[in-house]
Each structure stands twice: as C-alpha cells, then as structure tokens.
Image (cartoon, rainbow, N blue to C red):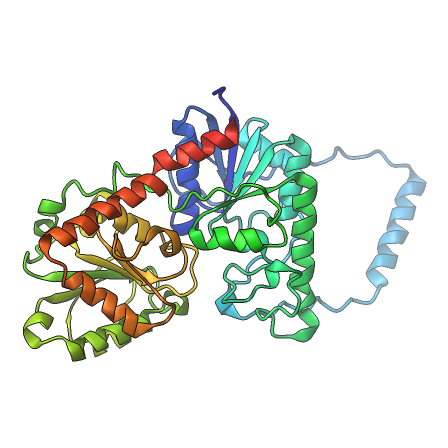
Length: 440
C-alpha cells in the first residue's frame, strides 16, 4: 500500500475517548503512513501530536481619505447609539445526556490555521470526540479545502445525534431529534433538531462515513438518519495493544499485588463511580444477593477490588472484603492487576465502551456486564463471561456465582477464550486490517 497522509482529530490525547484517538493515530503511524494527531489540548510528548494553533491574519493598515474617515466615525456613532439587544438565552439541558454539542452551525476554527498546524494536506481524516474544538460544519469546511475522505469514529453517539453523547433509550437520532428529552424547555427543543439536520447536510455534502467503536454504537449507527444508508460500517471496538495487555504473567500477578491465591477477586471501577451511567448501585444490589445466598465459608474467600478516583459511599453496605486501588495509568501495571483478578464486573447502563471490558478480556479475565457498549459483542455467555439483561441485579449475581463456581479447567477455558476474543475482534492487528481496507 502506498503511504498516505492522514489527519486524526480529537480535542485531547489522554483518557477515554481521547486516548482511543491517540491509539488510532498510533496504529496508522505504525502501518507506515504519515500521520498527525491534531488536538486542542496536547499533554503527551509524541512528535506526531500537534496542537491546533490559531493564526490571526491581520490586514495591513489602509490609507483612507479625509472623507472616508468622517464616514467611518459617523457609522461608529450610529452603531453605538443602537439599543442593546437582549442576550441569547443559555441552552439548558439534562446533564445525564451529556448534551455537549450545542451548536453545529458556528465555525470554531480557521481551516488555514489547522492545515498550518498539521503541516500537510491530508488525504484521509479520522475524527473522534472533538467537543470544544470542532463541529460538523468545521469538518465540512476542512473537507472543502482538502477533499480528504472523512471518517467519524463513534467513541460515543455524538456523530449521529442532535447533540447528546448518550441517548438513554431515546431514538430521536433515527428520524429528526424532535421532542428532545435532553432539553427540558419546549422553546429550546428545536436546537437538537436543527443540529441533527445540519450534521446530516454536512455529512451528505462532504461524504462523511462512520466507523463504530463498539457493538452498541454499530447497531445505533445502522439505524441513524445520517448513516443508515452507508453500505459497510466497520467496528474497531476498543483498540487493545496486546503487547501491553495480555495474560503472559497471570501466574505471578497475584503475588505482585500481595493477593492471596485462595481468594476470589472481583475487579470493578471507573474514573467516577458517582456517575449514574456506571450503574454501581446494581453491583451493590447483586453483591447483597450473593451475601444472602452464599455460606459463610465461601463469602470469606471473596474480595472486591475497586479502581476509582472516588468510591461510592454505598459500598460501605457490602459485607465482603473490600480494597480500594488508586486509578492506574501505567498499562503494564494495569495489565498485571487484570491478570491478578478472577473476574471483571462492568455495570455500565449507558456507555459506548468502556475500555476496561476489552482490557480485562485481553488479560484473560472473564467479564460479566450489562448488555451495552462493547459487552454487546465482546462478551459471550458460557464462553468468556456473561452478558446480563440491563439493570437485572439478580442475574448479575448469578453470573458472578457461575464464575466463582468454575473449576480450574473450566476457568482456564474461559480465560483462554477471553484472550482469543480480543485478538480476533479488538486488537491492534484487527484494527490494522480494517484500516487497510479503508485506505486501499
């Protein structure tokens, strides 16, 4: 394949959705292409990451005649005498929808400045989360200037909604985003409809295509007004670097964290456990079910490991042993933690990921989680974990107990299958095959 000039766009380069686009850029660069990840906020030191720098073009001072100067002064005085217009009312939204993309019309960048920041005219452009940086109109303007092929990656739902990043069951994005539940005030609900229409128009004129980031967003994109007519929608899942996240040290991992070999360790966590999207109340309910059902000698073997910046106070209700682990940024240490634990529990109820599901599987750790995000297509019942009906705490408890009761050989099979699932459907190599097809 010939070397391509590729631009990846993201607001940032670290954590969650921004980290995903960093991985996209890294994969494409390793494939031998000329790649720039252009961000608004640069934190990593990689040379291929370049911050957007706005270049202000200041026109040279004009030489004006005396009459022109008088006319300008009169116009200025007339403008100053005009009454002040009322300020535009601030858009009020329901926070749970993360309605962050509030304006798809106003231009946010100068394309010339962007291209100067990048240093070349791209042939292909891949975008992820670009909140407070770019909107679809900016992307259309970039297309107009470059004629690059545009691919939007669904790190969440934003690329095909009227502004929300999580829909909570709303399917307004299938049609027109009428009666948007994320916008309580009736007089402002047209914002979502107008945003979706502008995204649709920009996508049609600039030939945007979508790439899914999970099984859930794949199904949502297929139904969406903007992308339902796209012939092929690829799904790159969570982009796992299996050179870092694997099961090669499973035999020593517990010792690294001073964990007991005869205990059953349940791993769970999120950056913010107070976030209702993460559904931790259902995990607490499931553990309370187990507490009532299991005999005392078995309960003593169970320990809950919680990775988070903050722990929900309701966790005090749990009678099992608990241990908090500070949020881990080093992938090698994180890999060892996954390998040291016996099951990873994901209770997200509104999520396009999370990354931890595929990370745990890559390390040979079975996963139990609600049927959303990457759980939808990465977790298979009785194979590498259990996929639980949404918000069903009792079924969640049953899934935990099933893994807990596996014998050594059965557990080894689950672990092996977890690794295989990632290698086949979520590894860098898997993503490279998809990008090769796109760039041919």
